[in-house]
Amino acid sequence: MKTIVIEYTLSPEADVADVERHITDFVAGIASLGRGIQYTSHRRRGTDRAYLHVGYLPDDEASAAIQAAPFFRPFGDYMKTVCTVPPKSTWLDRVSSTEDLHPAR
Image (cartoon, rainbow, N blue to C red; front, side):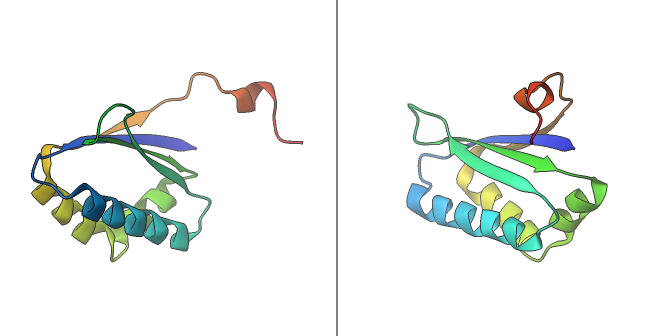
């Protein structure tokens, strides 16, 4: 399992409702791929412009499928037009998890 975190901040001129519609469509696109991908988008509490996405990808093929999907590039291009701090992605290495302590039964 691979984990990615993507963070960015919207510009003051960005229409938050429009951005969130784009995010919802992007997440729906990922869901339509199947492949065991888990993906969530969050707005930082106490802000209306700082976002964080977390993706759990089972393998390199799932990551490649997202990047090759027809919705991926248009979403990235759109995000460049609405952010003051552009999306920054960070791959994470898991240290420990409740799943490690209490595996699914």
